[in-house]
Image 1 (tube, rainbow, N blue to C red):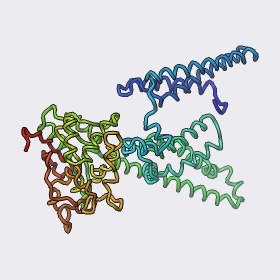
Image 2 (image 1 turned 180 degrees about the vertical axis):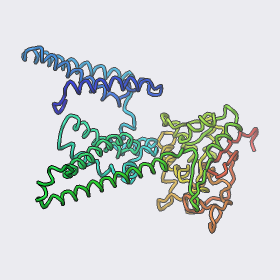
Image 3 (image 1 turned 135 degrees about the horizontal axis):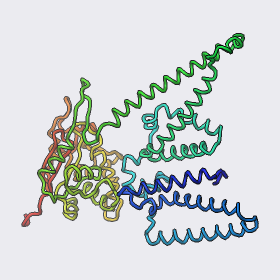
Image 4 (image 1 turned 90 degrees about the vertical axis):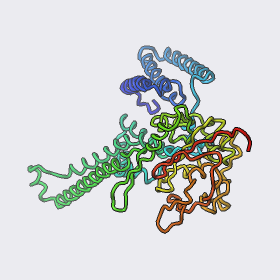
Amino acid sequence: MVTGRFSHRVYIAYSTLYCLGTLLSMQISFVGFQPVQSSEHMAALGVFGLCQIHAFVDYLRSRLTYEHFEVLFQAVVSLCSLISLAVGAVLTVTGKISPWTGRFYSLLDPSYAKNNIPIIASVSEHQPTSWSSFYFDLQFLVFMFPVGLYYCFSKLTDANIFIILYGVTSIYFAGVMVRLMLVLAPVMCILSGIGVSSILTTYCKQLDSTQHDKKAKRFDSNYFKKNEVSYGFIIVMSFFLTVYMIHCTWVTSEAYSSPSIVLSARSHDGSRIIFDDFREAYYWLRHNTPEDAKVMSWWDYGYQITAMANRSILVDNNTWNNTHISRVGQAMASSEEKAYEIMRELDVNYVLVIFGGLTGYSSDDINKFLWMVRIGGSTERGKHIKENDYYTSSGEFRIDREGSPVLLNCLMYKMCYYRFGSVYTEAGKPPGYDRVRNAEIGNKDFELDVLEEAYTTEHWLVRIYKVKDLPNRGV
């Protein structure tokens, strides 16, 4: 509409896609009426309404004189604008249309989540996409994407303008959040396909396989050079496409075909080692704890515990309750005494942590701990938790003897490193050597006061602690 290219074809295409797409998405129970109630979807609904108005105005223009049309047009535009503003304001005030979420603000301002809602910034899929991720996921398409854009700009049709807008906006949003690589992938394939097709078409035209032109071109000194260059470009393009196909197969098998709940690694001789500690821990929870037991863990493992251990958890991957997650973060970042008060407040029976210091698993809770501190201190009840207290005087996050005393005595540190000080992890290293942080832990000799170790898996990946009951009488 802005470029003056609105037509009946565009009207039919968008109206059909919007109606069918919205109705089909609403069949998913989790989605429900969000496509017509959340602010993020109002832009699409507004464009749908503008299409109807534009089509109606075009119909009136064809039926009325110019003078009558101008009067009616001004009246219709004014009336529709007032009605839209009034309805939108009423629905927003009454809560029928939810406000923009933090994720949406983060797309417009990448620093918004980090400064205001750390729970959003803590999610790995909400992190900005690195250049290595672009190349790892897209490889050859990264270089063909601008080529496809060039050919689309050279021939501006309605379809090409749509692809250009889709490509430019997608690559921006994919750069803000790595999860939006899924949105970028289709248009990357389309534009790269246009680029490859245009290049091959250009150079294939230089090849002359017919016999009737050979005699005429025999006297052209550049004929054989053009053929050689064309063959060269076709061979090079075929080579890159073959390498891309091999790369995609390898990435699919190695990076995107391994379940996160069963980990694998390669030994020195190249054989595969399986770490099945997650299922082992969830099986233990399912068969050795009361059915009404409540488990406190970081939100990353909420869905897994609910589904596989069949136990109630405090926070899960939905992350809709920022205050509740902040309370869990406060417990993890506090001393045992303060954490015990929070756990009693939340009626916690068991606490589960992930620890990779023995196996070298880097996505454990110690590496996520600073996010727990930030999220814990982001609410009013956690104002006493300061991130700087967990750093050394030189501003480092260390788990060895140089580490901050606040860190070395917090609940998370003690749960992860309980009894670890006597464990040898590598030859030539002292006991208590953390293979992820590459350091000997600074607090080895301690006992737990408010927790007792309930279960530790084979490779120490999952550690479960039971919250002690209150003493019947004072000591």
